[in-house]
Each structure stands twice: as structure tokens, then as C-alpha cells.
Length: 306
Image 1: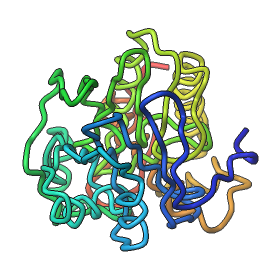
Image 2: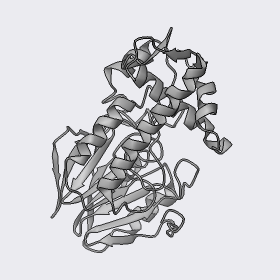
Image 3: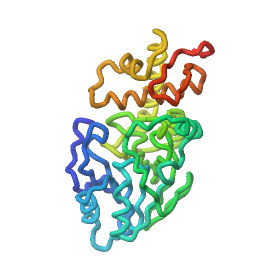
């Protein structure tokens, strides 16, 4: 299914009654074919994840508005630069307010706040630090429009201010759950402990389909969530196994665990390994003199519980 997902860029495609998708012109190793922008409604419309700062993409969104339709809501699921920058320009052109959980720092866990304050550097994944919504959403809020309603589900992990949106038995999962790849979790913006808890939370509801921020619809939502969590647990086990050889840096552990990764994705793999090591440190399974240093050496903790 992943290889077959090759939609026309900038062309609205109807996914089901009342929901369309437009793929932005920003393909990359981290965004796959490009960012999925969703248009919900048949009269007053919600634009979900307006995408990158691209006049071409903004024009495509505006051209998708049919006679008798109006954009009334602009919702950013999180503030990465492939999802939120177009929100401001689109709001200026339509008058619709921008909704989100908050700015780029909103929802960051206490652990990551502390690590950032102690000097842990971001991995440079493209956080939109200038993003500021007009209306801050809260977990459990229901955003209502013209014939539609969206349940706001705060799902930190990939980013602290990340939300998923429930629409009846459909969930727009943004970058939390995708079919083509696993979500990047890069401290201090991302938090693996939060990511796993968010997966558990999504498991508590019966979904028919996930519409992700990149790639094709996920038609086996429950199975995909279970796979993602098992994948993370297997990665954790591989990291602990790698540390049996003695204390190592994040880079060294990554080379032991990711043996066949393309060079273009190596830095992202290192950030994922760091996320696991910080999670394991919090569980007292690994030790480190200063986890706020990206060149820190990690080792197995004498008090770990295997």
C-alpha cells in the first residue's frame, strides 16, 4: 500500500462523504509524498493541517472551496513546519480563525522542560516557533462546525502540542500514527513516554480508519497501534542489548541498532534512540552522568529490572 500511494499533488480527492484530501508539494524522506491537508464539511469547511508555507498549496486549498462553501475553521494538529505555517496566510485570506492545542512549547512534558532548561538541544526537525493559534484547544474539547464535530484528543509524543481529531468513527491522526513509517520522537520536543501513553489512549476507542498527516489511510487502526507499540518495545530491547557491550554514546548505540538505515535517515534514528534512552533512564534501566548532553555516554543501570 505504501508504494502505491502516489496521489496527484495539489488536487483535492474525496476520501468519503464530507472529507477531502490535498497533498502539499513538499515531498522528502521525512514527509513521504508530502503533507496531507484535509478539508472537512460540505458548507462551512474546516481545513485541517494547512501545511507548509507554500503559496502553491494555499492556492490549491482556496481553489478547492466550491460555490456556496466557506472556510470557517483552520486547525493545526501540531506546529511542525510541514503542518502549521500556512495557517496564518490562509487565515488572512479567509478570515477563519486558527485553532490548535497551543504554541510550539505547549504540552511539553515536565521531563523535557527540565532537559531543555539544562541544555538538551533540539534535533532540528523543523518546529514552527512562530506559530500561535487564535484559539487554544483543550483535551476533550469538541470543535463544532456546519454539520460536523471534531473531538480533540491531546496526543503528545511526536510533539508536545500534538492532537488527533476524532470525527465519528474516523480519526485524523496527523503524525502520531501513519501507515508508511513510524513517528519520529525527538527530545526535548518529543517524549517517548508520552508517545506510548497516547497510543494506549487511542486504543480505547473503536476506530474504523485513520487518516494520517502523511501517506495513505490506515484501514486497520487497532492493529497498527499494537504494531507501533510492539515496534517501540522491540527497539527498546535492542538498545538494552547493545548496551551489554558497555557504555556508549547515542551515536554508537544507533549504529548497533540500525544496521541498514539509509544515510539520509541516520540523524532521525539517533533522535529516536535518544528518546528511548531518556525513557529508559526515567525507568532506572540505564544510567548516565548527564542526559542533557547529546554526546553523553549511557550504560546499563545496576538497578535495572529486566
